Structures are given as C-alpha cells and as structure tokens.
Image (cartoon, rainbow, N blue to C red; front, side):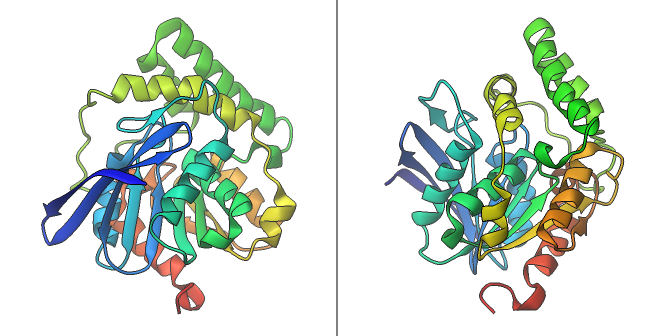
Length: 288
C-alpha cells in the first residue's frame, strides 16, 4: 500500500512520489511520464536520483518508475542480510502496485542482476528486460571469475580498513569508471547526505549478495520475457562486459551495445535513452 504520496511539477512532466510498504522495508518510489511502464534499476549505490536524467528523457514515451533500493536513501530495511531475490521481490511489488500487465525493465550492473532475478522469479511481470553488464559471475571462466570475486573482496576489505572513499576508488578502477566519458551537459553532483550510508550499505550487504548469487539459467531461458544482454561501447576490457556477452551466448541471443562505459546510463543519459527506446521497440515491443 502506497503512503505519503505527493506530486511535483518538473517542467512539463508530473512526478508522483510515494512510499510503498513491503515486507521488511519501505520503498521510496517516483513515477513520471505516460505510456508503457518502464522500471529503471540503478547500479552500485545509486538511488533513484542517479536515474533522474535518464528517466526525464524517457518520460515523454514511457511511464517511468524509479526507486531507492531498500537500505538506500529514502528506503528503509529491517533485514540483517539481503539477497538479490529480496531486491527482485521488492521490484515485483513496485510493479504490482502500478500494473497487471508485463512491464519493460532496464537495469545496469547490480541493477541488471536484480532485473534478471526479477525475470526469473516473476516472469509474468516482465515483457522485456535490458540487462546492462550484469555481474553474472557464474558464467565467467577461471581465472576471470577469481579476478572478479577478488575485486569484490578486496573492495570490501578496503572499506572495512580505510573507509568509503578508498574503497570506491579501488572498485572504480577495477571496472574503469571514467567520469570524463560523459555528455557535455552532464554535471557531476557533489555527494549528498546519504552518500556515505549508501556506500556502506552497498559494500556491507549488496556486494556479498552479488558474490553469493547463482542465477537459474534454465528458468531464465524459459521465461516468456525478451531478455536483452547489453554492453557499453567503451567497456570491452572489463569483466562485467564479458559477463553480458557470455549471458547472450548462454541465451542464444545477440547482445546490444549502449553508449559509454559501465556507467553509461548515468554519464550519457540522452544517448542511452534513445538507444534504450530503440532496443525496447525492436519487433514492435511488448505492446506492439
């Protein structure tokens, strides 16, 4: 049940903000635009604000749903341990509150992993899912899987020993996050008041959940949803890019290339919006 709803005018768009009560959490969500429902799931420690630029550029064609994952910013959690299944069930409840029809879903990084888990656990709710560089570690061959796991473990240890800043820099280097690879009008925001707590939550709860996750590929292959693995055009040298390519091989489907690198949705929202619209509407889309 949604509570604390309010509406804000954002240019010629109307954004509805509310909180959805779910088992063990309260989820802060935002809905804007009109058209087919599109859920955006941010990566890393990103809350709904990280997807704001992308959502704004899609709201003329879609009803765009963004939210703070449980434990981040405006969303609370009572859980002491989390799994990607927990996050996927949260996404399912958000969708159920808005529609009974299959929706579009776009996720990047851990957001893509959650989107895939949503597709496996609640296949009837997803018409098409675009999974941008998901950390599907089980698909990586050795020793690349060991390298990826070590990237997570070393970052978690750095966080415990040195704090958020050094840990972020370490992981950002591992997956080559390049803030210079962005559209000219994209401004780098100063960290907000939730920054440190969000980073702490990512490294304390979500990183172990990613490392522990094993996707049921048989169920994913059998899903009625169209599953589209996606990669960044500038990230072919990092292991999440390979995860997406291997996922495409596993599913027997082509992967799609998106602008920028691993965080292209954040740094290149205009180009990402156009590319996402193009990919979602291949073959007429789910509503065509």
